[in-house]
Length: 352
Image 1 (tube, rainbow, N blue to C red):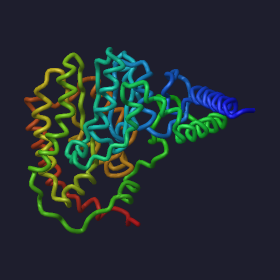
Image 2: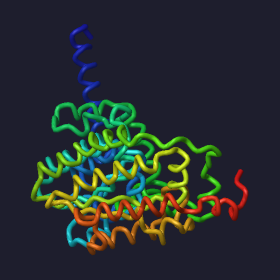
Image 3: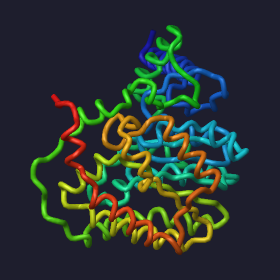
Image 4: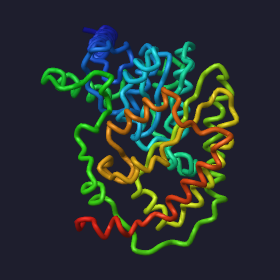
């Protein structure tokens, strides 16, 4: 065989192997890039930041519920049933505003019928410095250029995940999309556990200047208000999750209670002015936040609480408005600054 024929044969063999691998990968589709998942189909979910791009592109929905790990234990089916429209859950653990911006813009680009957004605006996310963002989304999966999707088929990690997904599927593991990324069934929610994993500082730091935190909130709000202004026909439901009383103890020791609440008041003032925004807050639900049996740590609450939040929002209960946001912040400030935190630890079992 001469050199030219050998070269052509090698090229043909390489192409054949790549086509076979590509076909196998398309069939397994570990990051859900090629097709949508059926409602009752079981799949293996392991990496939200990679898998979410394909789900955002391919699933059928006209509403989304989006947020950090505090939204992970929500079921999209609650909103599908409550709103009467197909809903997709979009979550990124410890997510940054830029990540939610990337995912939501892709959702709007691929689903012009999207008209309802539920976004969990964690207080921690609101005040986090944008300069510290550590975004790890694979750009080639989230952009609108189909040509660079070839990276999906040439990425070693993709094949590793495909092999894992195939093995998991054969062993009967996996779950439906509605149960994807949910972890509340494996966590312990109790006062004993939440206090055991909480580290309490001995000293109290001086109260911090609210200015830098309000500035951070302003920068992050610019991301959120861009959605709101660019899509005036879309209804945005924005809520704050019920951080436990342990969170406020931590914030008290850090000297940030006034700073964070000042930033929150500033954010509510801005957001409540938009006609297409509905605001909700569970930060002040004393019955929830003081019952540590609802928590597995100082912020993450049980599925029972998340369902209550979802149903309350869909019913439009206790909204935050331009007329009451100052009163709500003042009442929350009074409660968390006068609470007897020491009593919690006097009666608490010893921690490790």
